[in-house]
Length: 244
Image (cartoon, rainbow, N blue to C red; front, top):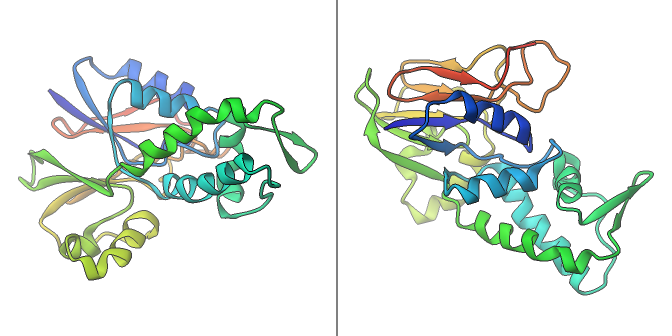
């Protein structure tokens, strides 16, 4: 069975369906995180991944939804004003709240939906699911060319691979895997597939890693706006559509 690792979806549900339709059946899908934010259908993307029980690692956008989404729920349930500006809302969280039908926009202001408390259940349940996502996945296969163990993470894990199980470095490890954009060096004996940093025109494929994020949410900019997936066994890259 093939393993296809899907780049950052960012709420682009139609692109996800388009991509999946192009990939052979009986394929195991793994996602590099950032399922949500920026695009307009984040709730549908999470529903799709959960429904099919696909594997996924946590991205920085999932981490922000856990933190700020939990605060949002607290404010709603306690009849407090909802926050109008934070790091998550500035980076696509606004679109995610709209996708769940929790808020409406009035000018620049977010206004809670009149029946928001009745709509909160799925949002809260999805946050609990996000909390269970691992920071990385070691697949039970080796890369056919290098023979190295295949590891999936949101951003490059090379620089912190050796400290992954050292509790005293847990915060450094998490921050690096979720947020850093450092150039991967060939220092760990793994084959790393990740996303996080959009690549123009095609995935960045090297002998020891693949960056499979091709800027799905970036519309109107030449070379971006597609969702891609990397097949470990064959080395093929599938795309949701032709590049602009």
